[in-house]
Length: 254
Length: 283
Image (tube, rainbow over all chains, first blue to last red; front, side):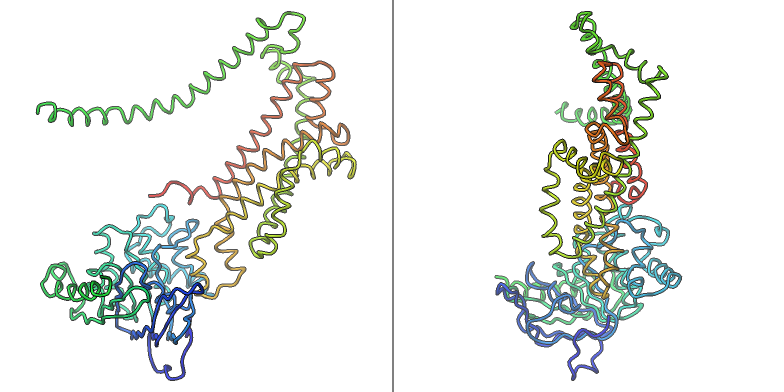
């Protein structure tokens, strides 16, 4: 997947860029209003906001699944997109699922297998290659979904609340694993979540969105170095950043 | 206070001891209970034969052993029933095979073009509502009382559940998978081959299993009406009825139903072979 809609003056920008993007559904609902967003490789931008504020729409626009009613979207390089659900094929084994995107991109069988195996090892699922999705836990299915995108080495990686359905411990473990993956191959990441703690823990920046129409109302820098650990989760500085995001969120949701 | 501390102990005790035993008894029950029903049914049958019917009218319901003798032991009637059943099975399975090919093709076409679905679907429903006894003689008059007319009746009978179930399966794939295909510019054919078709397999087998039973009924009913051409179990049923050979008639009825059961069971087994690995209970 290459450039979605490259504006002439954007050609030098690496990663993802949304310029003054607005989105209105045919029924008149205004979902997004003038969203500007620039994410360069090595940045992981978390987006928090209330349910229905248009967070997921930002990702759909960034990926090209939706077209904006105004503004431009540009993506440089390979795009990865992990949905809320693992969206695995129940009829394929883990390795068959992970190799699917490589298959869609016309990569040969042997190379596909190699890429899939590499990605499976990367997300710590080695040994489960022959398992069907129904035989995997929720956390394992989500790892498989991430591995599927990893096979194509994305330059821009979108995450739509991927860990929302997991229990607290699995979620924390997957957060650390995702940071590992990110440190390994720094992409331009956008991570949508409704958990402020998760947003701060994962992101290099946290964006706060207002609901109806969706606007970015705060852009908060997260000053912590990777890897981040449990000590950070319970530290005062961490709480401070969370409080800043929380205040911004509260101010717009009343 | 003492009861409060005692009751949890009693509870854990009872659950640990009864759970394994309950599953074992359940397995026994699943065999014993249907067997008891069979026994009760046979007893009722014998009771009707000897207690309800007087000797002059006993031929109306011969006892089970007389029927079993006619169907399984007596060489003449046994081979007649077996030969007729083979003919009927050939008709039914040919009809089912054609219905699977036609039905899956129609469903795939409908899934690819909405206008096609909208124009064909109402007629698929109407075909289903046609009373079989009304069409069968007509098919015979139009196309002759031969093998292919019988097959056509079977196809008409069994097409609908294959089309509807397959179409449902083709259209019910996870929309997220289609989004994924869109992101990677997958062709229509690739979507069909890698997403819609495999997703449709379990529903398709459900449809084929229902169709299998209907195809057997279609073969028997058409044979019953056609009486000529490629005689099978339907014709034999009619001969036994006309000759007041009630042992033969009842034996032939059991043979017909056993054909339906075998077809139903075989398709279920095949579906399990194809989709069982990934459709079992989740984790």
